[in-house]
Length: 374
Image 1 (cartoon, one colour):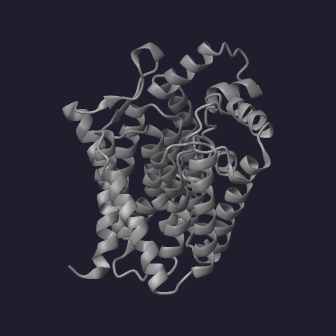
Image 2: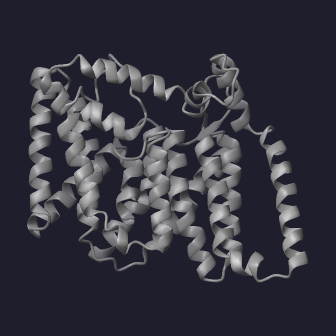
């Protein structure tokens, strides 16, 4: 096999690695670990990005020693913590120097088809699992994936890229097919993020065709379109109340006894699933720690306090001020925003939005690999 196919092959393996993770095997961790070590070795042999790698590896070694010998975390959990910290920055450094022999949009298409196909097939065959416990009162199906947040983030990030790709190739029916499949998944999974991502992508595609669909039409047709959109919006709002997503939001609102929907309490408890409360608790906990813990973090394996599940804050609290500065600094310097096409910018912003709402993007290898690819 030619060497240029090894990276695309690894990427296409990712959906199956996520399924293996759901099944409780350690193969996915092993394969992703081998990939990380491999690209590290390649960068060192090619003498590329040595400055950034040296700084990141130095921080990682100090952090690992502190976790094992000072904070008394287990060796394997400490390795896992460092692995998650390094995965996005090192992947970003590698892909910024990688020469693609295969069109990335083709890989994105295969990946999205695999994720949606595996999920829908698992539902049809009923071989997956529910996303919530019966006692939670919520409803949702996660299929053969361990995390509904990670699955949702991946689909939200890939959907604009794939649908715009086929729209440009004049194969709109394929774009519609992907939107329909993603929409079905959002109804089954019951998360706000995935449903919002499908709606946003649909509006983005329509916006790109605004001249043909609206502005180049006659006045009477424009009025008809506006009226039709208003009717669609009204019926859509009614149909939303019949979805699992709405049902889960109402369960959340009832559980926390939130009465005013136009309040920060509703935003925190229902929209953010109480994450702003977790943020306050983490901040208070972090303030009580020693200077070395503030610099290097309280540790990903720390079970004394629940994670915020808002990625930037989790990176700050779990990896410390130094870890946050290095992580963010690498992303800011290596992401060449001006060189990205419009759709890649949209997907990148969507992933950043997800990382700041439901998390599970920036230091979760199953998702962060796609962030690095963009």
